[in-house]
Amino acid sequence: MSDAALKTSPLHDRHVALGAKMADFGGWEMPIEYPGGGVVREHTAVRTSVGLFDVSHLGKARVSGPGAREFVNSCLANDLGRIHEGKAQYTLCCDEDGGVVDDLIAYLRSDDDVFLIPNAANTAEVVRLLAAAAPEGIVVEDLHESYGVIAVQGTKSDEVLDALGLPSGHEYMSFVETDWNGLPVIVCRTGYTGERGYELVPAWDVAGELWDALVEAAKPYDGLPCGLGARDTLRTEMGYALHGNELSRSITPVQARVGWAVGWKKDTFWGKDALVAEKAAGPARVAWGLLATGRGIPRAHCEVKVDGEVVGEVTSGTFSPTLRNGIALALLKPSVAEGDEVVIDVRGREVPATVVKPPFVTVDVREG
Image (cartoon, rainbow, N blue to C red; front, top):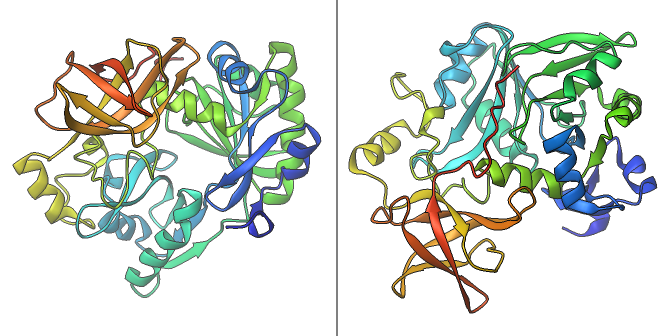
């Protein structure tokens, strides 16, 4: 997609004014990093204090009408019956072969109203599939550009919200629908960094004003606006899957170790038969972490070898600002086990690594 065709978030002008380096994320021009320290400084701000992310490129959709919860539950993999109103749930939209069309968050507003946040590039397809399957009376709406999303992440995230009079301290994966300056905003105890934090969902035309207030409230804690580069290093340290890397139509939840987001006992969901069969037989490849023990930064698609034999491929790789070390997520043959020594082929150079089970960094997002 050409730069001219890229969509922009409601905060675009603010990112440009701050001198952010911009790039294409799922068809949206979004900030990678800001001047003054870049990804490492922004990553560290989240781990030690607080960081603010514009993630308005994420999709937004609504499924409403009598029995909306039951309908969504018959389509998406996780079990919406496990949660109550006011809770959010990580779930998967799979195809009939068990591949992952997208991973997303479902907000259960009521039995008749489910709000969804898919990934930017996959929103239209998720909406299309749900709309095609919806019975009479169920309405599926694509609200991609009706709302912004701002993530407030880090140990001081509560203090930042408190300064704005926004609710904080609620249970992990729960949300509160409130107002700020008389304008509606959803405050959800979710995030993609591993740290304590929140994701705020304001109306599109309110996002800029809210962002400005959050930036000011974060300053006493040395909080920073953060680009999506830091978001990626933070989530990789936690071993969180990224669609298009660790999950895709060719990488199933069983292979990616996200079977915990599958309602195995449900009567039906898209891809159930294929996934049940794969789980019973055992997957042909399994997700692991790799901790480099030699110098080198692994990158996606690097081959992983044992005694010269290719045993898998890196799906995500980066430099960990917390560990000051190369780390990677990879899909490996079932014969590879935790603690095994492997080598990663990084542009023709063999970088030794140890197979580990993520997260690479110990953080309990549920604490507090």
